[in-house]
Each structure stands twice: as structure tokens, then as C-alpha cells.
Image (cartoon, rainbow, N blue to C red; front, top):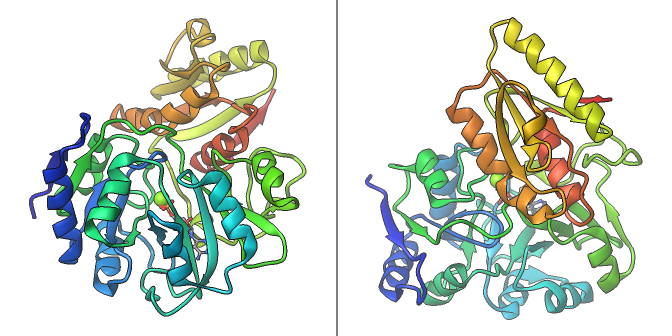
Length: 353
Ligand code: AMP
Ligand code: MG
């Protein structure tokens, strides 16, 4: 299969390409498309075969459910059962946007899309290409991140092409995504709203809308008060994910100490004949004396850190570095989300200095 690239990065969006992609979806094919979080790999959420193709293209375990993308609140009502009032409150506050809600499903969505679960994850993305595709195709679009399972999520069309070229029908290239981390997932099927995956929409923002909110105890995001060892409720959070090829260690603590510890670890690794990558900020980059240093962003601009994380992990993969050292980024709004992804990429390997 030849994967077609449809350039929709310029405004106004080329509607012919949206129509072409919609036809592919309607015929049961797969199209990758940009959202404000990461690129998604889309298929018709009501079509079992399309869902099977998504799992096959990604090499995704079949028990790891897909997120269904919609463009109208009524579509959530159409595919759910016992929808709680909190769903409307959260939709009014955050949709379209980077929030996914897990609700009880009805028969409309097949088990192939939900990994066999009786619940379905639903989101309304805030991206003009994604919304145009949902509207034009008339499909609710099942879409996990458009990467090979286990690789960092794609934040550019070129990342999708690297992983899925030849395996999917088309890629709508909408340029670099906005946020760069996957959506916040909340479970609305229990008494208390529970965060299953941290993202741009954080605990405080959710509490302002629905009151009590808790974090799934199985999730690690750098907070000491959260128990490690519990099983995460979102199946996808149980798999080793976002793993770079190089062995990644996070070094955290006061900045001067972190810089000298990373410099020392880097010299030791180089002495053993290993190649080293370092994830630094614009302020610290010049202080590293050896290794391949990449700047993730600016500590005062946490959006830059979220935006560049996956691209940097992919760059180190391309360079085939043996080990990677990263500073820690417990920033105010997205710190939990950033550290959750970085900790997973590091297999929880951290050094406190
Ligand atoms: P991705 O789109 O690749 O970020 O993957 C979707 C994420 O949503 C995975 O971590 C899934 O485990 C999670 N997810 C999807 N549906 C459900 C559900 N019904 N219950 C819990 N988690 C879900
Ligand atoms: Mg994913």
C-alpha cells in the first residue's frame, strides 16, 4: 500500500483533501490526522474491521482500547449509556479540547473499538482539520496515537510517516501539533471523577468544574504521595510506552547539582565507549561539557517542554545514542503530564541529587 500525504497545513484548509480522506474512512480505510494533542490514526469507530486494521497497523495489543473522536456533544449521548451530569459540565468547560471522558457504552460502538470493555473513551478534538474530517465523513473516528506501539507519540506528520508508511491509506499533514502530549483521560463511571492519564487539563482545572477529583493510584507522575505499584485502570498505561532506544535516566534536584551530576555521568559513560544524549533547557544547555545536548525548551514556558518532548526522544533514536540523561520538569500546569510521560520513557529510572 502506498500512503498518500495530503497537505492541509495551509489556511484555508484544502477541502478536496478533507473529502478524499473522508471517502477513505467511509470505505473502511485508515487516515492519520492532526489533533491539538498528537497525531491520531483514524478509522470509522462503528466499523469492527476498521478498528482491527488500526491495531494491526500500530502493532497495538488488542486489549488496549481506542479513543472515539466526535464533533458534537449529541454524538456522546448517541454512543453512551447512563451518562452522568458531569459529562455535560466537563464538555461545556473543556470541549473541544484535550480531555477524554470514559463512559459506559451502548451497542453502537463495537467491542473491537473498546478492547472488549463495556466503557468507551470519547473526545472532541480542538483542531480544524480533525473537526472537518469528522464532519465531512459523518463518522465518529476511532483514533489512537498514530505511532508504532511502544514508540513516542507523533507530533509531526513526518513522525507518522516514519512509523506507518505503507501500512495506512493516507496522512493529513497539518504541520506540527499544538500541545504535543496526549489528552487527559477521566473516568466518569464511578462516584468520583478519576484521572486515568494526566494531560494539559490538570487536577485543579477539573476540580473547578466538578468538585472532587482523584488520581488513579496506578499512575506515576513524579508526586511522592502517589503509590507506585497499583495497576493503572487505563489499559494503555500498563504497557511500556514511549520508550526511546537509548537507556534514559532522569536526574532531579537543584539545578547546579543536576548539571554537575549529568556532566559526571556523561564522562563516565563516554569513558566506557558509550554515546550520550542530554535533554537540557535553553538556560542549562551551555553548561554541559560533552555528549549530544538537545534543548527541550524553556522552564518559564512549559508549553515548549510538552511540545518538544517526543520529538527529542525520536531525535535521539535517530542518532542511536546508547544512554540519555534528562533534567526533571515538574512545571506548574502540565508537570504531572510531562513527568508521567518522561518517567514511562525512563522505565521509572531516576536519580535524586
Ligand atoms: P492513545 O490514543 O494511543 O493515547 O491511547 C488511548 C488511551 O486511552 C489508552 O491509554 C487507553 O488505555 C485509554 N482508554 C481508551 N478507552 C478506555 C476505556 N474505555 N477505559 C479506560 N481507558 C481507556
Ligand atoms: Mg498512544
